[in-house]
Image (cartoon, rainbow, N blue to C red; front, side, top):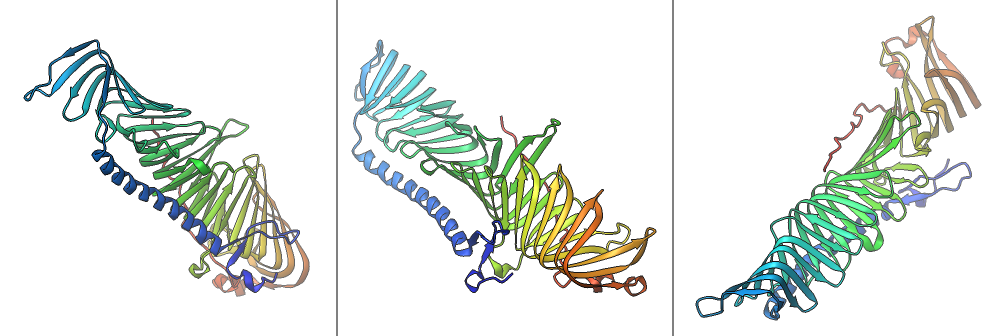
Length: 461
């Protein structure tokens, strides 16, 4: 199958039977990473803007107005500049209304220490805690005890936190939970921006979908609500848990350096050092993405200079290719379709590990039914080497070339092999093979033993 020169840095990842291919270019991949970096840059720039705004607001601060208190204790003198407010305390600063059972007013400092059933409201926001220090100079409410924010469909809870009524940004710390209409996020720390509904979670982050059987864990997670994108970095793992018909649990884990979830499309993109583990299936690749709606996982290697393959281990077999498409059917493995520089290997004799059966071609397709491998096809420039046995004894090797090779599998072994448009094969007698098995390996033979292992799944209450 010829590849046009302009696609020398592209990888086919779509259907091939009708010769209509879908390409993901290296430039598109780099642009995607640039977009993510741009999002992170915007977020960090916003933090510096907030600091500058706070400096400006500190100069232009407005006084906090006392609207109501059942009882006042203390008076303002040159020596005493605070007083205690008891019962139905109501304060106001601009569009912010503060209520509590008690408060200590620091008059010269334009601050209030609020105690007991503290409620701060600002437009649609409601902030609740038992103890809050409200600073009228910085417009920041700070709590060192359990604090909760409710803002429309969004709820933010933490063991302590602060909220700026001016910038509308909340910073919550320790055992933090953020929930909206589609996600629940647990983390050590969460920063939430009311204006954009964007959030940044850091430290032992777990993010759960409320509509899908998917959750993820990472050290850091950025959530961009306006475009329904979530970006996880630093040890991120995507986890999908399915229940089979027999009530057994089937867990899919995907680990990579970073993960971008396009939640409105149910598409998950994985960048760098991708590792997949699911029951008998294990896989690695440079990059990948998971289209959940169409039950499709695609692995590819956009940086050709690294000279790496996408690799799949399926039971006792191993498949290498430039790109691999995994097609699921009702959450079960159905078809594994590989493209370019493909080679499939399987162990013929467990007592003699160098006797490895091999099948190569421009494309290799593996068919699976009810979790059992039942057919393998090699298409275009198909080649095979099979080490044969007779009466359980080694009996040479058979080398074949054809336009297409079809292998039917039964009970885990080749039951029938069909060659289409074949060139007469070669039989190599055992005396010429024994001890020299590696000399009969196909030119693009490759074997990788470093299978990925299932990552440890974290749990949070």
